[in-house]
Amino acid sequence: MTTLKRRSVLAGLLSTPLMGAQIVQAAESTDLPVKWDKEYNVIIVGSGGAGLATAVSAAQHGLKDIVILEKMAYTGGNTAISGGAFNSYDPDRQGKQNIKDSPELHAQQTLKGGDYRANPELVKTLTENSYETVKWLESMGVQFEPKVHQVYGGLYPRAHAAVGALGSDYVKALVAQCKKLDIPILNNCKVVKVYREHPNSGKVLGVEYINKDGQKVTARARIAVVVAAGGFGANPTMRALHDPRLLKLTTTNHPGATGDLIPLLQDIGAEVTGMDHIQCNPGCPPGRKQRVVFHLWPADLIMVDRQGKRFVAEDERRDVVRDAILALPEQTAFSIVDADGFSHFNPGHVAMVKKGLETGDAWTADTIPELAKKMGVDPKALEQTIAQFNAGVDAKKDALGKKERNLRKIQKGPFWAGYAGMSVHHTMGGIVINNKTEVLDRYGKVIPHLHAVGEVTGGIHGSNRLGGNAIADIFTYGRLTGIELAKQK
Image 1 (cartoon, one colour):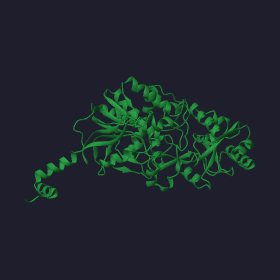
Image 2 (cartoon, helix red, strand yellow; image 1 turned 45 degrees about the vertical axis):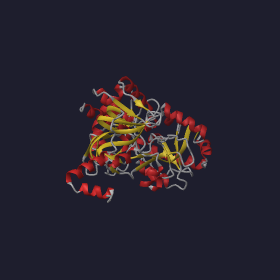
Image 3 (cartoon, one colour; image 1 turned 90 degrees about the horizontal axis):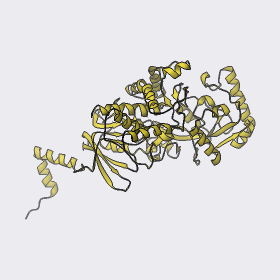
Image 4 (cartoon, helix red, strand yellow; image 1 turned 45 degrees about the horizontal axis):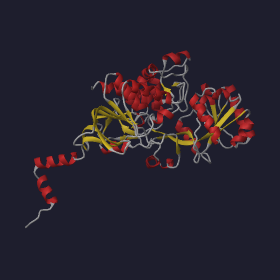
């Protein structure tokens, strides 16, 4: 008796066009659930600012049956621990401060600051809609300071500062809206698969996640899956794959910012861009754990090296400051502010500083020589540096090129200082989207029923993100995505 091998049978069947197509299609579809465990209109992956904003905006525009899946035990992601600065033109606040600004100027500076590597359409959409987003957040209870500032690396005075505890002000307001609008946030639910009709074609159908009990759950999305799971700043292996210099650096990110959804979306055909565009900010030097954010407002501080000398204009681009600090012998600097600068910190910043005093990552003293001794810096050298800087303030010309609008003396005690090493802060690269946040494949075509919002995306910030643009990005695009989703209900 002759036995046919399985391979021979398949080869024969595949030679018949109709039968072959049916078998291939069946093979492509074998991993799709026979029956979904859950069904929703919209499934949002990630409970940071982008995910929360998308959910709230969609619900406010009439869309129901939305769920947010969050892999961590807490809500808020990087947004909750961010500095919270929101860049936008603002006719009211800037008008009172005699600051000329516009969406066009903001777009020009964003494109230039990112070395023209950003998608101009994405940038235009961001800057034209940011002010409406400021007002939208205010309508939900977020309070901003009456004046705008130039945030670290922001290059222009348009940053809105929340009055409370860092970026957690936004999270508190949006979580309250989620409760009001009956939007569940399911913590400890890690998405491990995104389902598409076929491996590289068709619409996205839903996700599979592991719930808090360790069970696998399949969930269908009738309208869309929205990925707002953040970047990969806390994933040393992934970031070193694209920039080996960053393998051992500390990070300002929360532990869950590991970029899990990026390869999952690549697996179903999504394109990525700019993955080696990774930003660092002053933070903990290697071996330290407590970050102190004295650098947030460049008009309030100076930076010095271990010899007590300035080495960079504090209001420069973030990549310029990064490279200047990494070029120092021990890759570590110090940020210094006086009492006036310290008075501009909100309660969240103050709490970080107090913790830094306990851990030995920050110091305070009534005089500069006393502060220098606590820092381990030569007192005479630091006194001379500050005297030279203050003389430049009087002359309205800084020796290192700090802009005149950001020149303010360091002269009023008590004085404060903290470590300023380099920590991985933001990943500008990620999933390619259009200005409706629809995900695009490698051919530039839309993957139906799939959106991405926030730091998981690429193309908005180019090679270097302006300080204050990330918060503007997540909330502006989150709000707009919610509106877009509601149109499909």
